[in-house]
Amino acid sequence: MKRPVDARVHLRLYTTAEGGRQKAVDAPAYGYRPTARIDGKYFDFRVATAGRMELGDAYDVDIAFLDIENAKPRLGIGVGFCIWEGKDVGTGVILELVDRDDPSSSD
Image 1 (tube, rainbow, N blue to C red):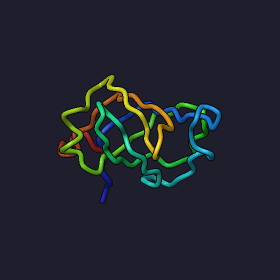
Image 2 (cartoon, one colour):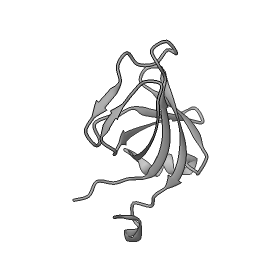
Image 3 (cartoon, helix red, strand yellow):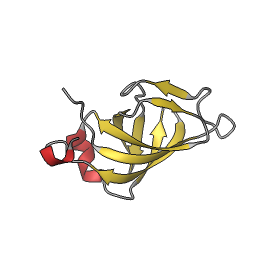
Image 4 (cartoon, rainbow, N blue to C red):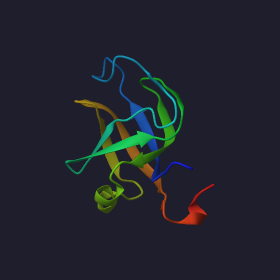
């Protein structure tokens, strides 16, 4: 069964000197599980794209929200958000939305 994807986003993780994480993210698909802060609301998400993300670098990745129905009203192309892990550790911008219920939007 294919796992869901809700959006393609551009993420940048802050360096440790910028107040970010202590270590890079090195996770399998859906292994990195931070929270997005959008308009003062918090939404857990999973990075669907596997691989290493170095601090200070930017990446275009697919993500899936745990509660897409509550997040959906705040999502849109160009919407920015903070990546939250008890503190801000990075930023993101939505590049593309994917309708997980639309069969034509899956590979």
